Image 1 (cartoon, rainbow, N blue to C red):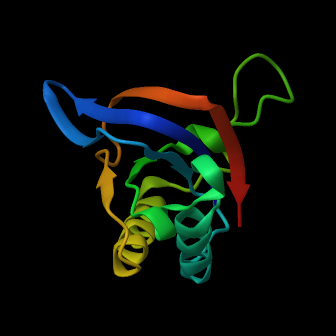
Image 2 (cartoon, one colour):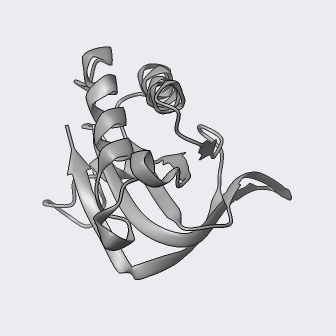
Length: 141
């Protein structure tokens, strides 16, 4: 499981003309990719790391500040570009395997008390964000 996590001052996801998720205050934009070998056993660890990562201002976390997270599924995080000019997607989980894991991470975050907004799995999404810092990191479990 891999997440690109950006500290943002605001972020939103739009599908067509509909905003499916938005945060209008400092928080985290999480682009979440699921590997073909990922299992439910990784969900709690990813949720804990996202919620407790001390990457907000003053080394705070979403857990300590109540800052929101916007979670967007992104299979392209497992694109392999080492060979040729076209990415290979063989490491990315198929949608039927990935969607339950993305949903489980969101549910686990909410169970921890996190405020979570989301995109729409499998949809063509427009993601808008204002990076704070800029501060972006790669988180893997």
